Length: 336
Ligand code: ADE
Ligand code: ZN
Image (cartoon, rainbow, N blue to C red; front, side, top):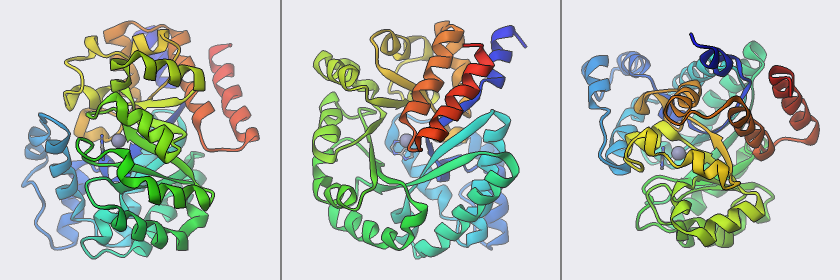
């Protein structure tokens, strides 16, 4: 291991952009399918991994939704979530804000209460066992209509003590943030935080819409903002945190290769960039792998890598004391 690899391995990390259904390792998917008496979407782990070659976001989403169909019971959601936390712990993740897609489960007959029981039980266990603190953020599926998002939101209110905010994900092109103005108005009225995927495959204008029309406090991805200098200037001025997912961007062909990833330029331009995994087994790596890939391709130094963890701490939905403790942990590690 090089000195830089060792630095990255032990750097305390905060992950703000990970979809729990997107952390489904093929081994666990096959085991859960078997215990539920269901046909797995792939006959073997090797064939699953071989199928994870995508031309665009939709090609990934088709497999992502097919994979989660084997999740039926609270125990399934528990095992999925605990497996992520165990892996995140190995990467020195200290705090994670986790997305899930309620409509992708209720739409196939799995009750929201079942999903919440499984995920929340695992989050509590993960904090006890690994000391990882978490927040949970349901995302509305933007390729469904706003009435469906509204029904999802109202159902989530029964679980509000376990939810810190709401987001927007799934197929971006042709589904602008403006489609969800009303439901995010309700989200804000009820006092929740707001995030939104924007500027992943969609244009920079969707980033502006997410800020102006939805009240987004963080932008998930946001890399396409770099196409529009006015949008970049605004994000810098307002200090908006961007949850960038480098391996995801390469695998979904948002960028041509890691050497061409704009993350270094984004940092230099003063954007509050963070590094995240999105859907790790589908895209070839967890948060540590994303840090390593960026460092190797772009040669970012320790200061830049630590700055991205500080940015994530600044963008986390936690109280001032918790934020100060996390910053101090990173400073103690870097000697900063
Ligand atoms: N759902 C899971 N991963 C996603 C991504 N990268 N973009 C949009 N929706 C998603
Ligand atoms: Zn995502």
